[in-house]
Amino acid sequence: TARERLDLLLDPGSFREYDKLKTHRATEFGMADSIIPGDGVVTGHGTIHGRRVFVFSQDFTVMGGSLSETHAQKILKVMEKATQVGAPVIGLNDSGGARIQEGIDALAGYADVFLQNVLSSGVVPQISLIMGPCAGGAVYSPAM
Image (cartoon, rainbow, N blue to C red; front, side, top):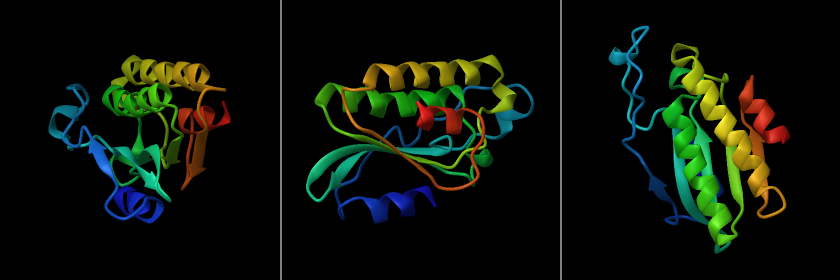
């Protein structure tokens, strides 16, 4: 799972999670009945060999790891914090791309992530791991 991957990556006991209970705000196409705390991505910071890193780990078992507006906001938060403090950001990507039920809101989320990729480029290391079948923005962002 996404959490198990972070447990393996980070120093024991160092992970501090952000927005664990945050959920999407979509209501159309049956989304009002699909409220899942965390919205398919685990985000936060921890240490690797004692050095601070910011991380996100997408969970393919939650709606295929698809990116919603909220999912994007959680990723952006760790990317922005990493840039502010000069620490690396590590993304464990396992996503089918944008959450189609959210339409333009999900696509706008990817636009925000892509912009932060560019703003962070040359400022902090951005490390991406492709952990499973990825499509769309889940592979474009690591390529930036």
